Image (cartoon, rainbow, N blue to C red; front, side, top):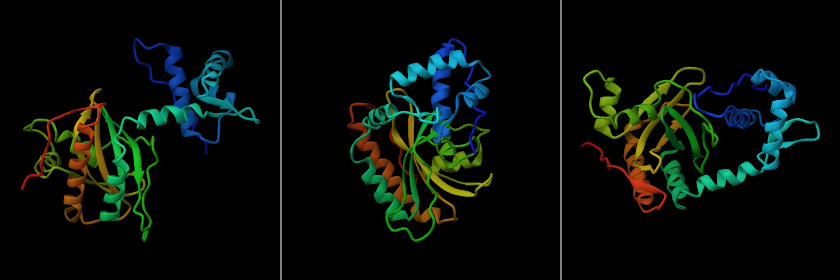
Length: 249
């Protein structure tokens, strides 16, 4: 079923045309089978003419294509953008994540934290698949709420008298754990990589599963992985070091 309810965010100071172009790309990403001009005009509550102008510009840059059914989908130009974004990460990142997936037997997800928005960058499942594993595709935006990664990020802040006990515990352990009960139940633990991008974006690793798992038994592997990636990111010219963190003993 197609998602045709997305609306552009109305941020003061942004060009309406640019904002709508970004919203079109996001909506098409949520509807990979394509959307008709009628569905797009309905989603943005606007006329066809202004949308045609934006779509034609996006087509010119190969960010959008119009298929034989006259539906609009993402174009091959988005692959170039994605590859360019991923090129800022050290080449060994996937190897570290793959090893962690095999060591823990869980799906490993590299998560970007842009403010409160958590987005999957890379998701890797164990090479020896015995049970069903949860997979979050690149570009997946995590739902709002008390997720392990958000708790781990909150633990980076100075202690506060009114903070949640989970945050205090995460600060002491170096990682957070949570169980998501809205919709599909998901179990997760997460630790923040001790470096941040030049733009201030934080990166974290999350272990996720459809089934409960022994968090303590996987803690050392997770913390070793984030420290390893921290060292790799520090040597990468696109990233700058932040204060390193160690696990409390």
